[in-house]
Image (cartoon, rainbow over all chains, first blue to last red):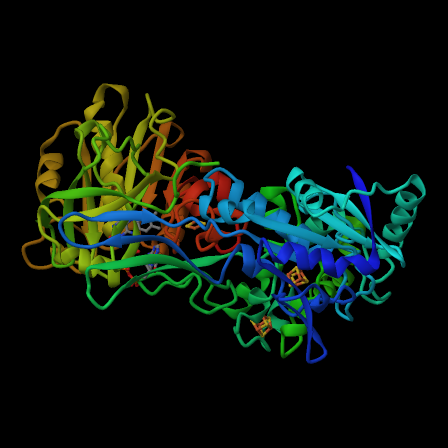
Length: 351
Length: 275
Ligand SMILES: Cc1cc2nc3c(=O)[nH]c(=O)nc-3n(C[C@H](O)[C@H](O)[C@H](O)COP(=O)(O)OP(=O)(O)OC[C@H]3O[C@@H](n4cnc5c(N)ncnc54)[C@H](O)[C@@H]3O)c2cc1C
Ligand code: SF4
Ligand code: SF4
Ligand code: FES
């Protein structure tokens, strides 16, 4: 991977030049928190953040997205919508890039989702290696402290300069176009690697899995029937916040809307959440996950077992957003996985 | 990248509509875009759109051996199905599919077949039964258990009449709540099992019905000595996409829209939340 270098003080003017050509959303500070929002000027970008409130998911997988529009009546016409808008997302931490890689795998699998893939193709991901971690994050345990793909380029802060690791031709072209052409030296690349090595120590020491990650699927297979699920789920509001903030949750509902003339309308998808009560309800009244604990458990199993089986990747990157979002504080994956591990330790060692 | 949207249906025309019962209608459908046929296998389903209202997964009820058009039988239960029932011949609907797995057409060759249909479970099973009857020489005995709550709920009366008359079809019908003119069997569908002597090792048993029925039928089928490898069932789940994306149809790691709806029982035995 080609590596370039940029003097730190030149970052905001680089963003300014890019904004002239393409809209850029980036990390901004807002009331003591960090959010992704449209950047009007490069200097609004905040490079030193722990975690953003919402993940960048909404920019590549919008909360509501038209799939096609149609005309009603004699000669029906169906017209699919594919986004042609280009967008730069500036300042994405490795764990959130990893989450995007998971979404890519899902929407690319078997039946390819052109709506997602077109938008994704037109989105530039500018990564940034983290300088600190939020109180709730545990991304090092999820092996999401570094990424080697999924970004067009990624910045690493070396104090006086940014090392820019290029991930794609698209990223290289953008840098070329805006005059970022100095190559990083061997020494600078080594310094970058040292910074990256230390990144995994940024998460708090009490935010770690107490067992090797590769054991997680096995642990879950043994832990399906455990009092933990019912005990914890008793406090669940079925509010779906844990799904909403999660960078890898992608379940959706599909609905139709007709305009007031009744001659045309559209079919769109909207985010859905497996914690919501009616997620598995069918018209005859049967609810296949009608009990709270079933829905509660389902999310952890999707994260640690089901999607791992299907796509070979864990669907949790350890961002900690669900733990922050959950009012009764029961959504935290490290906490749950560690509790499950403690209660099954005996079984696992002997079995 | 795929060159089309996986969510965009193709247009099709309702060429014949028949009221089967108070709640169920049959729709014969012709694809509009010159596609030769749907290309489905018995057990697969399509997503039917009423544009402006929504989409619903519906099994194809006819066999591909019955010509170029296909038939759906729809129970009126909610938004989409209600509006579908109001449509008339010549109206258009959207179709996506066929999707999902199919019944064991080849594995069943040379074997006896036991079909267990509870209520509208006969809708998808009919496709398999028609297929077998159209290839009658390839299969052994054809035994059909068909259970309904009451007589007016019985579907496909003309076909039932034919099946009753055929020497090479053993049809056992039952009603939970019989009326005076009913001369058949009385009781839930499991009461059909003792009526017929089967050769369990050589029988492929396919069960389709409402969720509550599976547990009891499985117990009965196993009690008859039918191996789990010879039992197939078709499961229903909420579905929004039919193509493995929306997450609604998941049972643990299984996606009913892709890995099902037809499952071999031995493949899902012990799966939490499945049955
Ligand atoms: C594989 C499969 C095959 C089916 N085959 C048939 C059939 O041959 N004939 C028949 O009458 N019915 C069949 N059903 C059930 C049928 O899909 C539902 O009755 C129908 O979706 C109800 O839609 P609605 O809009 O009328 O009801 P609403 O209650 O208004 O449903 C709203 C939405 O919820 C979802 N939904 C609700 N119930 C179900 C359900 N049971 N299954 C899946 N999604 C649901 C749908 O996306 C629907 O658009 C089948 C279901 C599945 C999964
Ligand atoms: S686990 Fe927490 S955030 Fe998730 S649905 Fe329950 S209460 Fe809401
Ligand atoms: S499950 Fe929680 S910690 Fe894991 S990726 Fe989703 S929001 Fe982040
Ligand atoms: S119906 Fe959407 S994933 Fe199966």
